[in-house]
Image 1 (cartoon, rainbow, N blue to C red):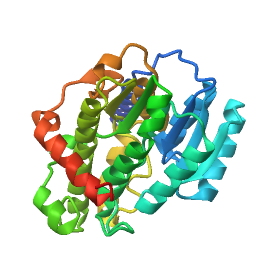
Image 2 (cartoon, rainbow, N blue to C red):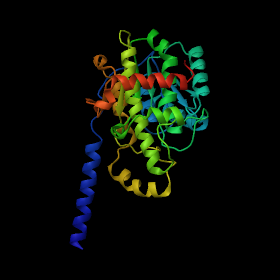
Image 3 (cartoon, rainbow, N blue to C red):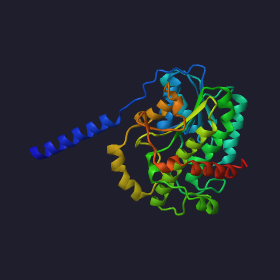
Image 4 (cartoon, one colour):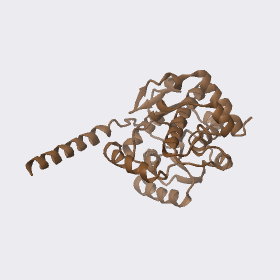
Length: 317
């Protein structure tokens, strides 16, 4: 009995140590955002909601860009109650529809005079196609955010200094860009197994990093900067559409080793708020610190080609 209790105590201590360690570090910026406007996609849950709470607490006008009105309005009530900031607004955005992206941008530009920070937070790992016939993961995680950013760039430039923050993942290291597959299937890969979906997710996260790399080049000389980031392994609803066996395998790992949403939002907040990182535009962050990217994520030719392929898929050329 004593040995069993000792093992349980050691496991509990180890778990507590892991949870303490992986909650660090935190964004330490004291920046206030009164008079500033921020868009956060996918902000009704997870790190998006936590990000919105922090920004609202700093005084920002926060645009909750979400698909589900009821869930977004419930989140807004929570945020207003927690922060005392009533400048938190829902605007419908379905990232699985490029027309919805265009409608959102049009409505925003008509109704909102400012945009200071755009946070491309939403992401999924789900099978199927978007309403435009594009692979769901590629369409939502990259293409819709690409179009949204391009449509809002002029407003960001007008309100500078401003920032574009795109949530990627360390999964980019397992990603690749197959332009032949994009050409023939409008997707990053074929297959709908759990493993195939995970691979597509990693490919889409590489797209996020390459998009930021190319965007920084195109913004050179403007007062808009951009950053991509890995939020850490976060307990979110990303895998809510996963199958039984995938959830069976991953649930214990997530429960033990992944951080809560508050911890997971810290690098997003660092990239959105930290003073003095303007010269690092286009770079990649993790744990609130600059990280070096694999060579494939810094490839100028691939980043440029991804941009050029994304434009016609969005109807921009």
